[in-house]
Length: 316
Image 1 (cartoon, rainbow, N blue to C red):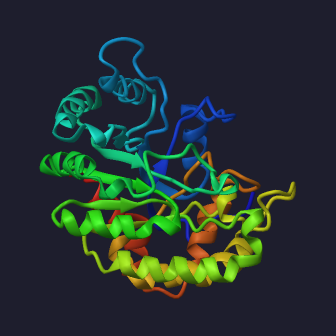
Image 2 (image 1 turned 30 degrees about the horizontal axis):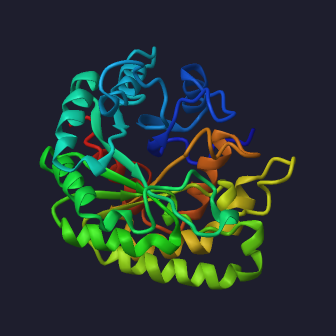
């Protein structure tokens, strides 16, 4: 494990899971060990991953079981201080029933909904279950569901692929008072099949992110750098990657993304355990700190802590 860089910098990790499905085993003790391994992580946000849904009752209310599960974990104060659950936004106005259930189950820690819509016509690019449709976020019912979330002051996390980013623009402009969080840098899909087109995909991704950044109600999560979809050269290997290698490979693109949105609309995320590919928690956050060394102290505070706690209303 690397020595911690700038150990006094305060961190809110706004995107992690607890998982014992999909081949992962990452539970409360694993999270506690990671956040206690040297960086000054004072708070975290749990993001839904279909864990422990209720086994009975109306189908659309069963995701509230995930909040029951998280709240019942033996975690120190600050960990999972905010919880983002799932609701099927296709319910439209009926999503209020799900929000009621989440607010009750969350016991003051429910902060929003994540609605994932990854879609690709090419099976080789389907790195996650196909979402509800190519342009789902432009659907009127989904937009009504998102509006219902916003009326309660909660966020909507979006995860999709980079070729769908204009859907985020569409819903953000349709609902200008709703705060949307775009996960994992908008996920530029650079799989093995796509490697020959890496430069073109990267250019299209950054151009599309610029259009998303023009929507002031969208906040960007900076992470997912070790997801297989992003095709970093180390994700298929066995040798642990160093923070310097991550910073060298991703630094320029990450800084372009930050400069598009501004530090006050960007937050670094661990995406653990999904991003736990040949890298440990200390090394990942060291990489983020190396990438941001050229930013001011206040800008780094936004990127590592303030944007996340403001967006997810942690401690407020």
